[in-house]
Image 1: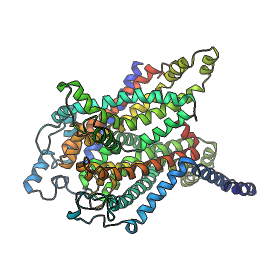
Image 2: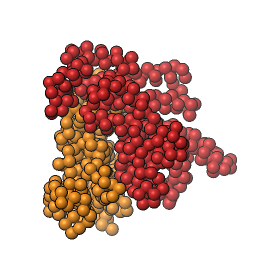
Image 3: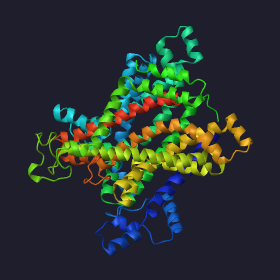
Length: 313
Length: 302
């Protein structure tokens, strides 16, 4: 078990190195002068020189790569080209709304999608199953920013139940904090619920065909117990896997959702940085999001052994 | 039942090569699958979108990029069935032209990522020497959320139709590579491939004759999903303001521009949004049907 954890941790290191190199290479391998691209069309020579200096673009490429890795190991993602504030600090200031949004979405997903998948799997091809499948294709297809605006239109503009946009930190009162998160979480959950409900359904259908389920039925175990204890438990591995893989689409979704609902989180920060051509910030956030994705999947892989003790490495 | 005719044909060609009758069988399955229910609706919607894109100049009531400050933010009228945006541009015509961008980006990304992914996937699957280098690189690219990778590429190259397409296509490639590689690895251990290798068939022939044909069905399915995903990515990028410039109307940037006026004129955002959602829904439904028909093994897995 311990050696498996160690092996798995070590195997994600090369992926992280590749990610860091790819992100490093993006700027340096861009055709033309990267500083000129970042500075825009009406940049002065001084501005160009400043960008070149702060990104150390005049150094030989290998020296740049070494500096990049040395800084990464020291937790230094560089500084904003505009404000000069360290990127790490900017991330710290903006991470709150993003975490709240992600946590809300993952909770809603687990609470809604897994029961949906179980209900659908009980009678494949039945009315409930077809409804769940149709909802999941719908959830998967309708873009978050379309769902988001439809929700705002219905619940904020037409019914007036919830605020249109914005964010309040939890310190300003829990209800005003939660109130502004309801619609964003609903909008973002759509895709995710669709994904997880689908995988729950298909893995439970598969498990329900196993011999031990027939044995459990034969000895007269109640259906509830069969579904929850025998089927769900054995279907847990693919479900957890897809939750891990889905983090990638969750990250994309966070960027979009924060824009729709004006949440001042990391996703908004990326978009602001893109519009302001603040490359160090873009680069730092991409790195952060990618590493988060890799780490979450690492945790998921290790969790397998907890969910399914049969897996031995 | 219009499907009864091919069954005679299939019977009639029993002594022919096995290949055409198998093809005909698949075709018949496809006809049956697409001829009913949601798949038929999806096919019709997609066809309408294609027609919209093709005949946009004929169907449009106004020039999609003509600015008319006097008519800004006007409601629905004879000239402007869906009203106008903040620059007085006709929303209906812009949505029509938006279909062009979506279909071009979707089809382009699907074709190019499948072609590049096929080559890299075959290399990785057949030549162990390069396999781990290729696959680690692909893992790395896949770990970067595709929208962010595209955003980085676009912010470094500037936004044009070409750069947006490249930026959308690159993140799609690793998934195609993985798929092709897994098919190649599976087929490689088949007896007929071993036999061909033993008989000294040239590598080129083994690849083209025994390997690549096996990847076609899964690639068609994957291509459909790339098509949908590329349309979504383009719309998302344009919506965030990191995509196409607004001289090229795309569903994403029409929505992006309508955002500030959403509370008063929800149609600015909702109409292109509906067009986008319906298109994606149709492509995904068709993708599911294609997968169930062409690739039952994959259908069972997801």
